[in-house]
Image (cartoon, rainbow, N blue to C red):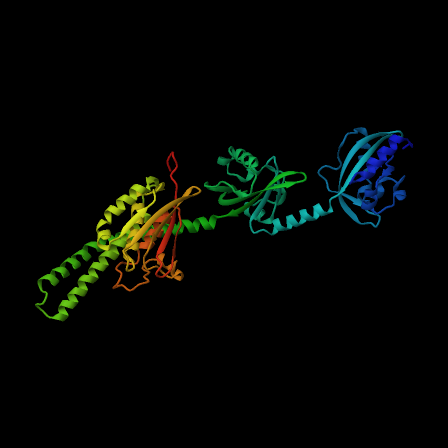
Length: 482
């Protein structure tokens, strides 16, 4: 290049560029380099000027490079060099470095030249290799797709899960792994994710299936993670085959249904003979009291009390089994009206105990009205039963928590030690002696089952002598229905 003010300005600009810059003429001779090029390749400037550009290219690529330079000068336009290929530069010490190169045609006093802007991507390559190692080691199938829904990366687990070799995945649309009946809508789901790219499970609330190479389907869970890379936006899908889990869940549901049916039938069939035993032992106690001897009276009383307790237990078991087997669909229910019905049903118990039930206005929730009635009745009855010396006071509150309501039933009763906080929700668990507090020990187990059937959670906070607060969550009722 000739010495003139314009050339000096050009050299100053090139020198200030943070990337390595190499200017090459048609004969592939290096006409200009900047300081970053010296640092990248390890040559002094005077060692490069006038040398062929192949000096900076690994030996195995040199033979085909002249043709590539000729092709550029035949169609001189700004573009990336070697698009789709891994490019490497060669340092003076023989070491190779992965690079990206942008080419731009430049008119100079000596003719048309190529300005190559060179970026050392060693750290990016290392990060990519680490990422690929993590993906490869994942126990889940990992698939990365680009903005055009093309598969760009898979791991070994994906090959095993779907039955394709890695080369059969790459470049193919992700819909190859989607069952035919879902393919038409899949691009829309991808577009929806792209509009709000954030790590989240795919298809929340829907059953998802993957399609194997042999045409068989499998139920899957998929987690989606967006990735912004220098060359574009990608989505990484983490896929888990849940065939075994689904099979176990189906077997558990069948087993539970059978147990519920057995408990219902057994409880129902036990009621009549127990009623007869209780009635006849009471009749014996009334008709023959004092006519035999004290020991006989005591035994008859034991039999009568035992029969009545067994009746209550069978009734509770029947109620427990009905929660799962005879529950109605969840519909919008006014919890305030349900509480009023419960307190009316408990009027005699409240009068006898001197108890009082207070509440804030309660909301509209998504529930089975009969089971919500049973839930509140069990909790309030418990609060009255396990009272201290003072008359029982029960307070019910509710506050919103997102799309749910948090209910709390608080009392001033005897309380429990928190080491038993989980145990009280198990069947037949009693923390107090039978003679003092009647019951089968199943009331809170029923309450727990009702809440879980409604998709909520239940827990207790308490301390001995300080009362208890039972908290549970229920779904809010939507305006248009459940």
